[in-house]
Image (cartoon, rainbow, N blue to C red; front, top):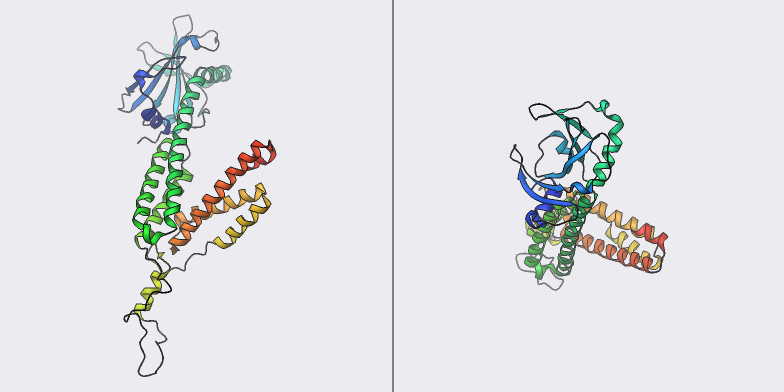
Length: 364
């Protein structure tokens, strides 16, 4: 997959030969001389937003590259190209590069065609007075296409998130009885990781999903070592029964037996990511659960936001934590976070329905 998320979206969702959009003449998949594939959207000359004397527009297009072919491409997702003539036989090329936020990477770049049909850059101070005009011209020319591409991207991400949420809800149900559902749970965790990785390929911002992927991988690793705690009614086997020290006539000894160590080690389903003997992490979940219970009574929007932020912070910490973490606590954290998110969404919808825009703004 390309590092350019917009290229990935177009590659999956758009068929160039059948692509139709007002203001776009043709769409095609081409290959740069460097070997990198790119999508080219030829814009209709008629959508020229205004004239820039003495320049007259000949043609213009938008390019979206799979791989960077220049330093500017490393910072941009797509660029706009326009060809002008000045009526005196001179031809010019305008390049405007845009990042993932659809803002300029650098000022517009103008070049003049030479006798051997190459383009020689013009010093920016020679056309500084045109900078703003060129920027506005490019923005107006690309607006309809870029809006369509971003809407396509957002819809694709919405589908990813919807599918992920369904998996997450299912995983939450399975986690309530992990002893019986361990294999199903591991399968769905793997599917959730795959879904997040797919979404990352189509998203501009990947930090939050990256943190979730790291956490889910840790959860999956933890379940590989998972052993349910013995029930209270479970009979003690002869092997586990403490032995009497004949010399002292006391039960056990000051040093725990290897069998008891092993049993204690697995009783809370701890997993040590780095195989160290660190102390278990106290996630403070009981206090957070109490805060959530209090919020249900107060409905203070700032509190649910703060609670959600605290849970996200813990989740990110667990993505990189190397101490022992119990599977039960990780699952408990995920269940609480899901409950808080759903409660926040319900509250936001209620505020919008009641036209309480002040509260809705805080929750959104």
